[in-house]
Length: 307
Image (tube, rainbow, N blue to C red):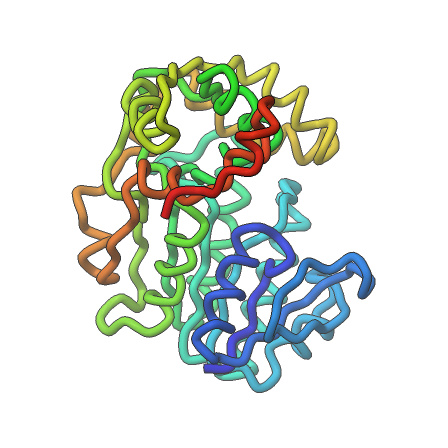
């Protein structure tokens, strides 16, 4: 395949681009970053440009047979609508055989006042209405969010897993790698075109169950702590800026209301069956990460992750 990957300089799109390149597909992405500020993506070619410029997007898609799309952390409806129109037009002009759109979140059935949901719904509607051959993936929450400087030290040293989801909320946590596997499968699988799949991990876990799985993977006792979404947003704003942080945190503010408690849960194996996926159990994923980099004990910092 010759795949145009929108969003490859981010974590989710980067995981997709790497997996495609590993499997010897030709991958191209669009970025505004200068050469020295681009993430390492072996086998991926870069085109300079902006999603808001139709000609830049057209050049990205030129010659592409397939496409993978995840939108940036932008939550302004008009801007997102413009991005989506440019992507749809470029995909149609290039004659792509299939476009896989990762909504980067589950999306409630009914409309909400949450920009993170509604801008992703806008993109999906624009792509679907354009007639481009489409598969939509709606993941819940990423395990990789927890392998971070904000969570790693507390997990390794104190056994505390803090996240802004209510402890009782069942969530089908998925890794970036398993997301990438789902995207690649959706690009090629028979009988899935036109479908929307609530992909997720092996099973849905409450906060306590997630902590137990992390405890098994880390070899220590772990307890779950539901983080206040306001505190989460404040911390995220220092990294992403207030606008993007408010957009991301909107999901967690919504989940805290309890209006749709099963939104992030599993789909009873429907997506895994359709896409022939076998997501990794959480404890296995945990055991493969180099958590020792956050250990207070220097001897533990030299330890190797379990395989």
